[in-house]
Length: 110
Image (cartoon, rainbow, N blue to C red; front, side, top):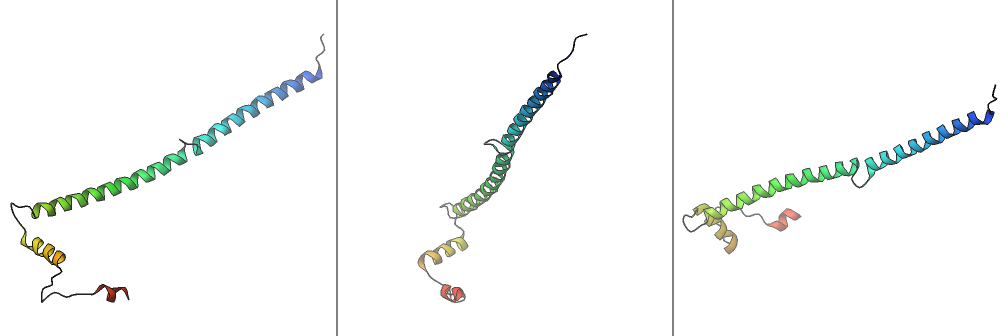
């Protein structure tokens, strides 16, 4: 019978442990970068949040644009909304009607 070297078993176990350690380290490396890397999960969540806020702002701007278009259409030369025209004249010329209530800005800020 052939006698086995008692160190061969220890070397084999050491090699298996080294391979397991290398595989574990590799998995840990890729997991960390999958979460926190440039294109990781955390970056995705930040970009998604920013995208959602930009979509909301775009909707607000579109509504504001539609309001401005509607007001511009009311002041077009084809037809004039008299209430809107009066409002614009008062703002531009600084006139007030006798029945208007005027609140001074300085009084509000105090």
